[in-house]
Image (spheres, rainbow, N blue to C red):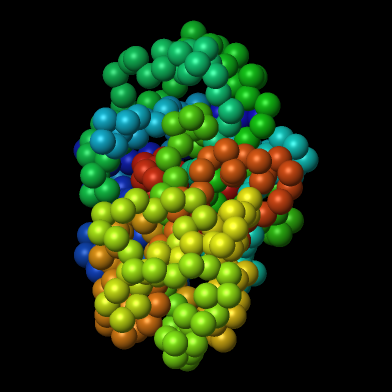
Amino acid sequence: MIKPFCGTRPKKKFAKQVTSPNVSYIDNYKPNKKLNFLNLLNTSKINKSKKILKRLKDKGVLQEDKSNHFYLYRITHNNKKLLGLVGKINLDNYDDKKILGHEETFKERIKKRKEQLLKFNSQISPIYTTYKSTPKSLKKLKSFFKFKPDYNFKSTDKCRHELWVVKETNTEKLLKKYLTNIRKIYICDGHHRIQAMLKSKKKIAPMIIAFPNNQVNILDYNRVIKTSFKFDKIKKIISKNFNLSISKNNKKLKQNQIEMYANKKWYTIKLFKKSKELDVTILRKLILNKILTNKKNIKFVSGFKGKKTLENFVNSKEYNLAFRLYPTNISQVLTFAEKKKYMPQKSTWFHPKPLDGLISSKIIS
């Protein structure tokens, strides 16, 4: 299921300069560091990105391993640890009960990703996946991380990132044995990249990072919209299926509840009847589809940013409504994937994530 590969890594002394968290974690990004991988990602000119990457390799800032390896990746956030295994998967196994997705995608984004991947021929961060684990398998997994890491530093996402290159023969044997027990891999974050690779019709082996399902953390993924509807009309539409009330301070959101921000006030929206549907689906079907006339007038905002960010979007008049959702949980993700059902786009925000640039690979050898 998961195979070793020749990874590309920064020299240790450059690792902190080169690597970067996902751009969503960074406010007011400006491309000011010549070594940073964000410079590659945040230009629409692929040839410019290729030149930057070549320059980093020519200067010896980045080096490709000469033989195939597995890589171990640990992320520590608020004393919680995610233990990741990095390798490559065979896309022939996608959607045949071995490698499963869970989320709908945007056609335009797939098209853009396909163009980027084929021209750039590099995957600068692994696709985030999960697999089912047990207390026994978790104990075995932890034993692989007892050695001193090759990389160990804190990044601007306020997480500690550690990477091991598995070179020791005995550890590699034990790791291979551990990997034979992983029967299914679930795509968490990276659906657009996977679809882009599938549609390329090239022999591509994606680089993935696989975390145990009981370590995965999902945050709320919220929406801000611009609508031409007056607020009274919006309240009338919502009131057909929900109770609408002013939110109480510091009261935690529950499943089947949605928070809405408008006119400098937070409202709690609660369904009249309990539903088994995802809150993100309920929001789309019963509210957004009725008040959003232009599908481009929506922005997706990670719960990592906090409620204040949602308020700022609306208060700035750029948008006029914000909706905050209860987070989707990992068991829902696995259930949807196994039933070959798909959640609406941007239903899940997985946090924390691996850095861009700490381990990268060619997608076509």
